[in-house]
Image (cartoon, rainbow, N blue to C red; front, side, top):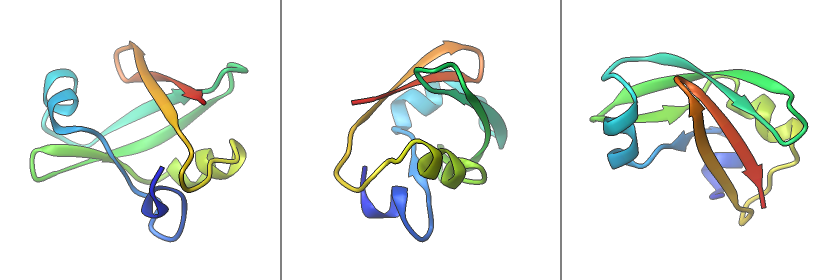
Amino acid sequence: MTKSCVEKCFLLTIPKAFSQSHFPPAKLKVVLRNSSGKTWEVNCIYHAKRHSLSGGWSTFVRENSLKQGGTCRFELVEKNVMQVHVL
Protein backbone atom coordinates (compact mmCIF):
# COMPACT_ATOMS: atom_id res chain seq x y z
CA MET A 1 0.00 0.00 0.00
CA THR A 2 1.29 3.43 -0.92
CA LYS A 3 0.69 6.55 1.14
CA SER A 4 -2.03 7.77 -1.24
CA CYS A 5 -3.89 4.46 -0.78
CA VAL A 6 -4.11 4.70 3.01
CA GLU A 7 -3.90 8.43 3.83
CA LYS A 8 -5.36 11.76 2.69
CA CYS A 9 -6.78 11.04 -0.79
CA PHE A 10 -7.49 7.33 -0.12
CA LEU A 11 -7.33 6.25 -3.76
CA LEU A 12 -6.31 2.77 -4.87
CA THR A 13 -5.73 2.38 -8.61
CA ILE A 14 -6.51 -1.05 -10.02
CA PRO A 15 -3.93 -2.35 -12.54
CA LYS A 16 -5.01 -1.41 -16.07
CA ALA A 17 -4.91 -4.94 -17.53
CA PHE A 18 -7.13 -6.31 -14.74
CA SER A 19 -9.45 -3.33 -14.95
CA GLN A 20 -9.96 -3.69 -18.70
CA SER A 21 -10.48 -7.46 -18.47
CA HIS A 22 -12.99 -7.52 -15.63
CA PHE A 23 -14.88 -4.20 -15.41
CA PRO A 24 -16.93 -2.17 -17.90
CA PRO A 25 -15.52 1.22 -18.95
CA ALA A 26 -17.73 3.11 -16.49
CA LYS A 27 -18.13 4.02 -12.83
CA LEU A 28 -19.45 1.15 -10.74
CA LYS A 29 -19.86 -0.15 -7.21
CA VAL A 30 -17.78 -3.05 -5.93
CA VAL A 31 -18.08 -4.99 -2.71
CA LEU A 32 -14.94 -5.69 -0.70
CA ARG A 33 -15.03 -8.62 1.71
CA ASN A 34 -12.42 -9.27 4.39
CA SER A 35 -11.36 -12.61 5.87
CA SER A 36 -14.06 -12.34 8.56
CA GLY A 37 -16.76 -12.05 5.90
CA LYS A 38 -17.60 -8.40 6.63
CA THR A 39 -18.38 -6.38 3.49
CA TRP A 40 -18.03 -2.78 2.37
CA GLU A 41 -19.56 -1.19 -0.73
CA VAL A 42 -16.98 1.00 -2.47
CA ASN A 43 -17.20 3.36 -5.43
CA CYS A 44 -14.99 2.36 -8.32
CA ILE A 45 -14.35 5.36 -10.56
CA TYR A 46 -13.25 5.11 -14.19
CA HIS A 47 -10.66 7.49 -15.65
CA ALA A 48 -7.94 7.19 -18.29
CA LYS A 49 -8.96 3.61 -19.17
CA ARG A 50 -8.53 2.32 -15.63
CA HIS A 51 -10.50 2.03 -12.40
CA SER A 52 -9.70 3.28 -8.90
CA LEU A 53 -11.35 2.55 -5.57
CA SER A 54 -12.47 5.79 -3.95
CA GLY A 55 -15.65 6.50 -1.94
CA GLY A 56 -15.93 3.91 0.84
CA TRP A 57 -12.32 2.80 0.41
CA SER A 58 -11.18 5.01 3.32
CA THR A 59 -13.64 3.27 5.66
CA PHE A 60 -12.33 -0.12 4.53
CA VAL A 61 -8.74 1.07 5.11
CA ARG A 62 -9.46 2.31 8.63
CA GLU A 63 -11.61 -0.64 9.72
CA ASN A 64 -9.01 -3.14 8.50
CA SER A 65 -6.02 -1.19 9.90
CA LEU A 66 -4.26 -0.97 6.52
CA LYS A 67 -0.96 0.91 6.64
CA GLN A 68 1.56 2.35 4.20
CA GLY A 69 3.92 -0.43 3.12
CA GLY A 70 1.37 -3.14 3.90
CA THR A 71 0.25 -5.74 1.38
CA CYS A 72 -3.20 -6.87 0.28
CA ARG A 73 -4.22 -9.42 -2.33
CA PHE A 74 -7.51 -8.77 -4.13
CA GLU A 75 -9.38 -11.76 -5.52
CA LEU A 76 -12.41 -11.30 -7.78
CA VAL A 77 -14.81 -13.95 -6.48
CA GLU A 78 -18.03 -12.80 -8.14
CA LYS A 79 -19.00 -10.03 -10.51
CA ASN A 80 -18.04 -6.82 -8.66
CA VAL A 81 -17.17 -8.69 -5.43
CA MET A 82 -13.56 -8.88 -4.24
CA GLN A 83 -12.17 -10.93 -1.40
CA VAL A 84 -9.38 -8.90 0.20
CA HIS A 85 -6.57 -10.79 1.88
CA VAL A 86 -4.55 -8.57 4.22
CA LEU A 87 -1.06 -10.08 4.33
